[in-house]
Image 1 (cartoon, rainbow, N blue to C red):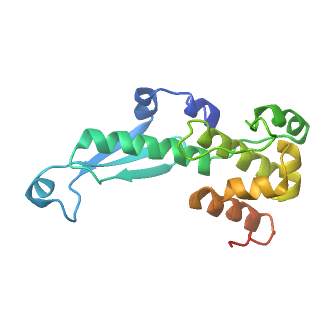
Image 2: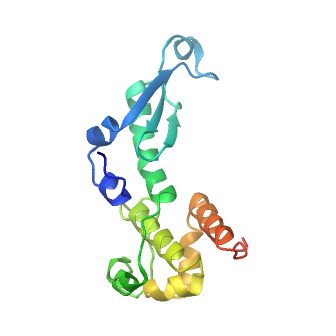
Length: 175
């Protein structure tokens, strides 16, 4: 039996994660010349335990596309798979929130801690019924800092608004 928690999947090596996937290769359409039309370099990964599907077809190299698809799968796991967070464990979240020295959550997209922090923030947002002020309080940061962090990436912003809609909250306004 495969464990269905994101925290377990996130800790897997690329090879272990790939073993949980159905891998399809195919010929991508579009520009790239004659070689692109002759080789099956595009890669589609279907993560069987979660049902997530990602593709990569930018490169003419199947190996590069497989690596890109794995990166996208890890990103999708943090964006789409929520871990249940009971109310009593919200108090322990502050230590995990990865705030900077000034008490702010300031991570860029290239920081390796960014996507795990996104997963945690979205988990807390879900646990608080998508109430931004409550989630910020649980994370030990200001509401403005949380909104700024959510704005760092369009997919994160979209997922936060999806959670808010699911809980009957108005979507956050984009400025």
